[in-house]
Amino acid sequence: MQTVEIADAAAFERTLRRLAHQILENNPEPEQVLLVGILRRGVPLAEELAGLMERFGGVRPPVETLDITLYRDDLSELGDLPEVRPTQFSTPVAGKTVILVDDVIYTGRTARAAMEAVIRLGRPARIRLAVMVDRGHRELPIDPEYVGKNVPTAREEQICVLTPQFDGQWGIHLRKQA
Image (cartoon, rainbow, N blue to C red; front, side):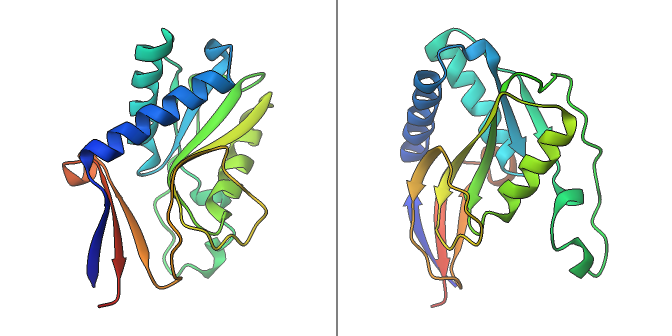
């Protein structure tokens, strides 16, 4: 596999700052925003966005963690059932603007599962989607409201969003066959 750096740590952080500003601009009542990080890499992104929103807007939205395993549409196709974490939020979703945060949007199936999981917890005022990378190839009519980078890819390529929690740094890499 050949790895191409799409964004180094500095470019990544600039993109996160831009996303935080966009969320604040589009949500004049930031105290009504709830950031929901989709396991795994959406969680550190949501935490970082919350900190930036507090820095720029004075209000730190709560951050919740969402495991979409039970809502996947391919669960019956998996050989071994994955570990499932119960979904319970300490912050009610009813009436909130829920912003789902994920690293990459590809087919749209993860976002669909996340929306279903959130709706089971209550009725939000609205649900929005923030992703670091949109790589195209949608199979469902789902488009994120907030996009860090659009990176058109071939199906056999992979986008890797690096986070300090898992990789020791922020960054975006494209992996393709050499």
